[in-house]
Length: 331
Ligand code: NDP
Image (cartoon, rainbow, N blue to C red; front, side):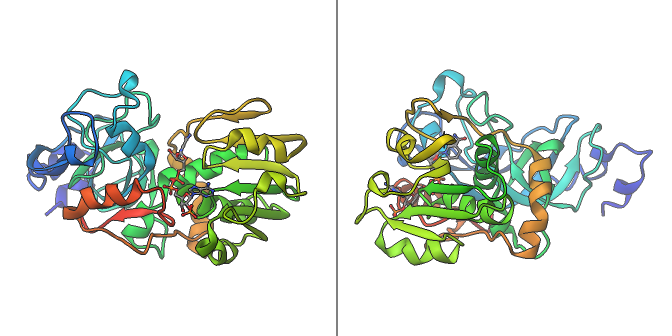
């Protein structure tokens, strides 16, 4: 099987067409609402593969707050049409390649965030399904040494942490405060600030029982927000990354000329907000750090959740108390 796939003269898409079924299991919603709108469809259409895309047999997926906000209808003005198969984060195996695909081939183990702009026309057929179609440029090879669940936990959060710190101008020797250090983005932002950008001092906030975790991730200063208001402490930071929605307080602790980047909620200058862009090249840049273990994925210990437990997984994510990432595996 797949014998013809490597023969460059034959259309790569034809070689494995018989292996990929026409229908698949997928979580779908056809109306906006709370987690109860999610239904398991046993016969959803396997997405078509455009010429610049590959079809990924999904092995693991992860949830992000944007999945819940999108499902609640918060982005309906720019959303794709219903019904929606949610899920941005994927790790899996390439089973089919489009005619313009240059590097990836069948059998490659990949990971990535499946929609380039998560709020602007995101894909209708996401990663909470047995198959998902993704542009080659949004994917990277799965880091060696990580399993599929670990790889799936990374793409949206790690690219957000990286892009946020980059946009904020973090560089070697600067200090940074991460608000929400125990969450999906924050847990990676602490590690990336330290090991990729060479920050001299990394501080982060969380509640009492997550303070030791912040330190284990590399935070030099762990602020327990149930005991201290970070904006009332004497320290100032060159960069503040706000993953909580505290932009008004964040601007009070930045040094003169420093940057405040917020992921959610309002902020006034010098703070600014951005929305992550998916880019496989960024994952490739981060792969050495993930392969060396300098940057480690953090999967919430409640999970990974089984594919049958996607509703429970969403409900858990939506408590806002997740530690690291809520992962669905195996699929
Ligand atoms: P998570 O669901 O992973 O965040 C949960 C964590 O937040 C918990 O560990 C919790 O810790 C912590 N938390 C909650 N309240 C506070 C607080 N007051 N102070 C410190 N920590 C707190 O979310 P993500 O990290 O995935 O995303 C964070 C936000 O960023 C979301 O609103 C998301 O939509 C947004 N986002 C935006 C992106 C963009 O491109 N603009 C991209 C990615 C995310 P504890 O239990 O200790 O309170």
